[in-house]
Image 1 (cartoon, rainbow, N blue to C red):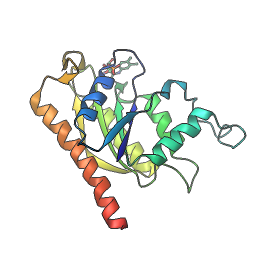
Image 2: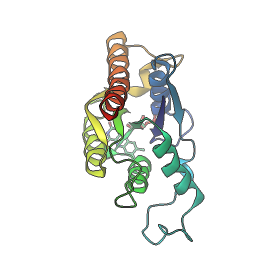
Image 3: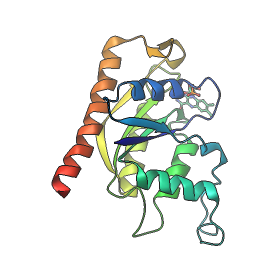
Length: 185
Ligand SMILES: Cc1cc2nc3c(=O)[nH]c(=O)nc-3n(C[C@H](O)[C@H](O)[C@H](O)COP(=O)(O)O)c2cc1C
């Protein structure tokens, strides 16, 4: 099983990247987590680019990565009360073409880290909303890290209860994949 991880902060030293790594560390044995490393290279979605002769390679690769993944984990900072444009753009790319979009029916979950103690509540709500509208089978539960610059020590969440919540959400995502596989069999 493979979980594709989309990280919405593009900066070096990102706390969301640390949160992504903490989530990947909680994946059970036999489940891989892969961060899509080229979101910074993904052009803003445009229908003018969404044709065989214009499709950027990175857009094609993102769609293939989502199609090949068993689940998607969206990891986002809160920017001005919403999810980051980097992950919103990624969702837009994988929500097309209509009728054959890679994200449709894909189990997905949202986690977020932000500087304020509100723990990116709005970014998480909007992340769930856009994934649902795009057609993913998104978990309603999310995990948010507030005051993110103080939250990690050596790549681990200092708050053990929050880390347990993260593990539980990751388990729920894996369960969703397994349930989908059982009902398809
Ligand atoms: C453009 C911008 C807008 C921001 N808006 C919010 C916000 O609405 N709520 C919030 O809690 N933090 C906000 N922040 C602070 C980010 O949550 C903080 O920089 C966060 O750690 C970024 O994630 P990163 O460490 O993964 O880069 C904003 C930061 C930037 C650069």
